[in-house]
Length: 415
Image 1: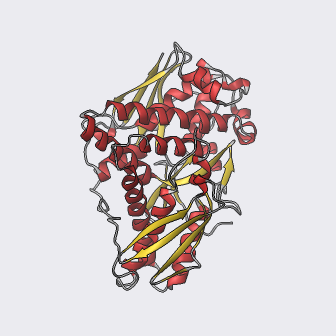
Image 2 (image 1 turned 90 degrees about the horizontal axis):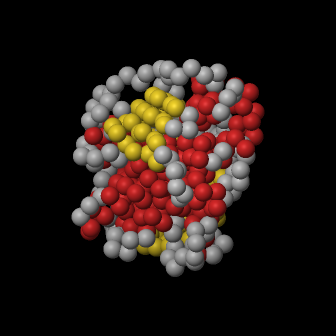
Image 3 (image 1 turned 120 degrees about the vertical axis):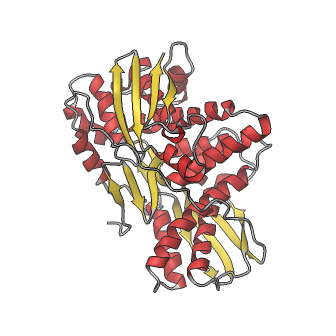
């Protein structure tokens, strides 16, 4: 049993861990999203990844260390290793780190293994999250101990990489050479939001039971610090890491090419990948067969069942507003993590930004009605292309957005 404290609110669909919202995503979403941001060579994607990870981890651990002032330097590093393993990120060994530097060994890495699934061989180490995590920990230790640790600043150089074929990752702490780790770490205050309504759909699927059961499951890293579940590898990732890398990417694209439409397309495609692999994997899992299939009376109930699952994994609260099987789905998302993150770190948006929610909503309709997940298909590349790259497939369009001032985000999915 893990001793990491999870504060899950079923009313909000959000899980906070030491002050940071954290949620589940799979290795396929993580590898595709990272590759999407890495691909444009005219963007400094490394800076985007490193700052976003360091800032988010720094805020979480600074909060925790201030609440636990008696922790020693070594105890702080040990706790950081525990959280990394707990989240399914892999294993980090800080035993060679002192208050003046050293090196961190990544004995396993969610990102390192995930990136090896992409087409082609990498030319550069890709464990940016792991590297930024280490930086965030060291910065939090420094600022919670009066600045005595690594007082002159530091950089972190990766000298070994699982994503490049090494058996482990190695991160060397370079002292007296300070990287600009923290750029955006003072959040804007969030406004009051509308009351989240109860589910109005008539179905035999008991969302309350599903949310309580899934949220109560011990989904944590195993002895390798990984979470194999539902046919994928999960990670309980920081919501604001996703938000910052996605929206910084969008901003950089807009600066360089003058418009944001390409970012919309790419980030929505990442949502398709997530919906196909994670939601599809859940609907093929033993947990689905044991908990949810007994509640299902017809094919439409599969939609209600998977939305109930979504409401247990930290994405906010999703509500089916209108649903015509095989024709149209209108999904409302209340306090979704994308809009919350945009408001918190970037302010009010002049365009809809719930790209993950848009892509996943389309994926649900494609899984059920452009394909047929109820027949237990193999979720491979060919099936993905059949569902998302053929004529008459379902596509989502965002009609309302919480980050733009609406009371909720709304996605309309049609063929």
